[in-house]
Length: 110
Image 1 (tube, rainbow, N blue to C red):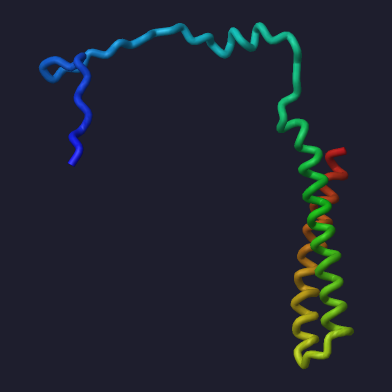
Image 2: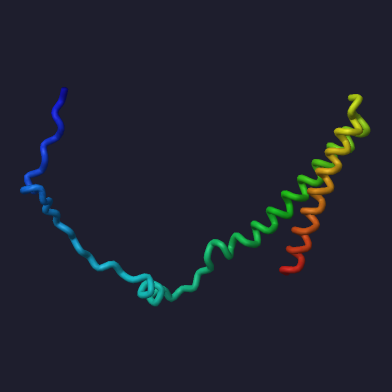
């Protein structure tokens, strides 16, 4: 079995001697004072895009569910096609409601 690594010579009588290097850390306030350019934060830049992405996602979800509901009711030959179409229509109503809320919120913010 291999032996463990030997201890460093800096340890004497159970007390460790460590060398701590203390450096001065610049304060964030000083850095802000030196920065003369005003750049918008990434959250400000992404907020408009995130709103549009949410509106488009809910619109695509609503369109897809309405398409599935029409397919299940009119084109499917399964005995339970009305049940499947009803569930898809319920999901489509929920997605349409979400789209309406997000679209109205986006219009108000403009």
